Length: 52
Image (cartoon, rainbow, N blue to C red; front, side, top):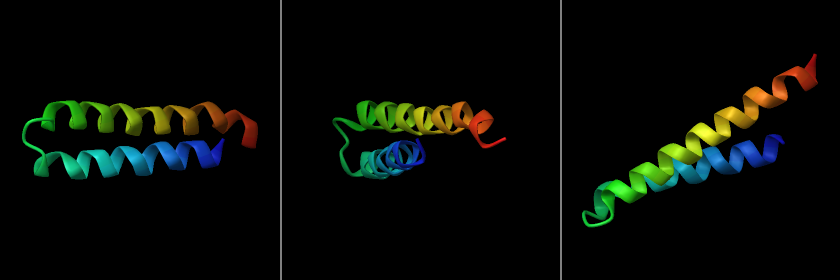
């Protein structure tokens, strides 16, 4: 679970960082990157009850 959330967060940040260099696909890359960041945070939030 931790590995999956880290993968989502890192890949989302990478896509969002790559977006300004690609003007044609900028909106799509920002949207996908933001979605992956949110997904990574949701996975972390879902896993919090496991660590009680």
